[in-house]
Structure formats: C-alpha cells, structure tokens
Amino acid sequence: MIFWTMTQLIKFYHHKNQRALKILIKHPLGFLSLIVFCTSSSLSAKQVDLVDKLVESNESSEVLVVDAYMPEVSPVSNVAAVYLTLENHSKKSVRLSKITSPVARHIMMHKTLVSQGVSKMKHMMALDIKAGASLEFKPGGLHIMMMGLNRDKMGQSFLISLLIDGETLVVKVNVRTAKSD
Image 1 (cartoon, one colour):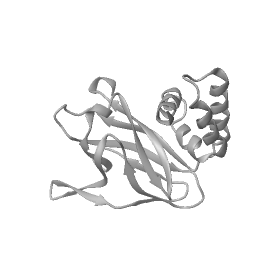
Image 2: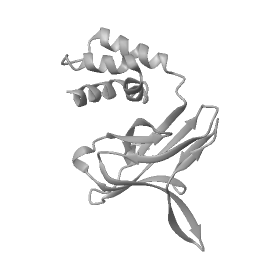
Image 3: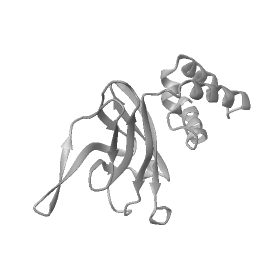
Image 4: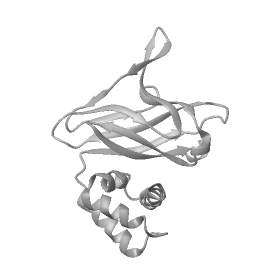
C-alpha cells in the first residue's frame, strides 16, 4: 500500500518537484500524510493541497537535482548511463557516496579519462560537492553507470536513490529517445 501511494505521489509531482518524495519521507508531517494517503484509493484535492504545502515549506532543500535523464539504449543492452546535475545550495560540502535503483543490479559512478586517444572509465567511490557548487554528470565526463538493467521495471521514467551525507534523495530519471533530444 505504501509503495502504491509513493508511486501516485511521484506521478503527480514529477513535473512540479523531484524532491517531493524526499520531503514526504524526511518531513514529520509528510510521513504522517503518507500513512493517511494509504487509506484512500486516489489523491483527493485536500491531500494534494497538503502535499503542496509540504513541498513549498521545504523549498530550501540543500541539494537540488536538475535534468536527470538516461539516453534510450538498445533493447539488448544491459548497461546504460544516467546524466544529471547536482546543485549544492548549502554552506558546507556534501558527499555523494552511493546510488541505487530497482531497475539496475549494480550502479557505479564513473569518470571518463582519455589517455593517448583511448577512453577509460575510472570508478569513483564518492564525490564531494563544495558549498554553493554544482556537480555535472554528462557524456564524456562523470556519469552514473547502471549495470544489469531490469527492463520490466523501466518505462519512460524510473527512480534512483542518491545517498548524500547519509540522507536518501529519490530522483525521477526520464528516458530520452533520440526523437526527444
């Protein structure tokens, strides 16, 4: 029941605020409202208003995720890269130490290095984002490598969880087709 509610909230908020799920889990009233939502079969206008207020009250989130996407890959491929930008709006450095997702068996952070015309990927155990700075995962640079894809759980979008300074930030990743670029 909780999974269904979280899915409904994510569907509702994906276009408004990717941080909604984090707010619902971390905010005391958010968790209570999550329990209340579990008793209904759909989100009422009153419930939507409550979630809106929770999201608005947490606009000062310290880390913001911008433009999370995965380029569409061949149906036979079991690996894919995810790109996004992390913006640290806090007054201290934060550390991204782990990434998980139900659509991949294993996820690593890689940095692309070019030596003598040959590209190599270096595994990054953790990445620090300085106060007020951004960290960009982009083609040819840092990227999130997803291995062992479970395509049954992947549609036009899916979720990844970022562990940043011990807090989990759940992010919606859109799958971009060549036509949507």
